[in-house]
Amino acid sequence: MKFKHPTVTTLTLGALDTNCYLAWCPDTLEAVIIDPADAGDTISEEILRLGLQPTAILLTHGHFDHVLGLLEVKLNFDDIPIFLHQADLFLIKGAKDSAEHWLHRQADPVPQPTNFLRAGSTFSFGNCSLTTIETPGHTPGSVSFVSTVAPDDVHIFCGDTIFKNGVGRTDFSYSNTLDLERSLKKLLEYPGNTQLLSGHGETTTVAAEQKNLGFDE
Image (cartoon, helix red, strand yellow):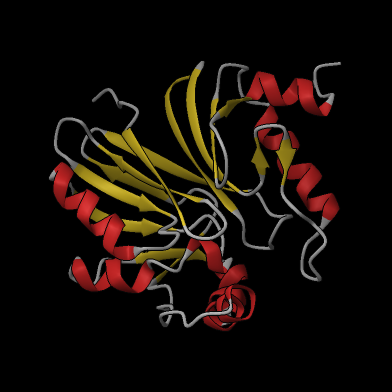
């Protein structure tokens, strides 16, 4: 079977304009939800509008702005499994309190992950497949999800590791600048036309960010 890239709808949600991605197989409508950032009702309504069959929630990392829609989505779709890297479990456990501190409003409880991600964790949905790579630095458990159709045809959901014209923050006590640098090198070794779908902002490419970060010199 030849894999396809998933069709993607981007929902930019919440006070921090966080990208939630609905990625689905165009043939079967099986889908995964990547980072249900906020407004679980909006996410659920879009899933129903598109007629999707969600199979998993995949979290690039545990920051509150990427998980505030978890509870409603989980309740609306029959306790759909939630996947997170174990190194970010402490962030999920504190996500509700962090959200209320920074947003100055009540937040829904944040469900705990049902499964832990590791390097090589793979998710197949219809004729699409995503493989997990570890990209720590911004947080200890940051991961990216890679869709590979051919060696020179790759899309990566990269969370807050890299953005268009920017990289993830490392000024948190648990962040690690050297880890982030290693993760950036890992991502920027992919072909230049590789699509990078970030946790905030517009989609960019490996070639563009190689140039921005001086990796093309």
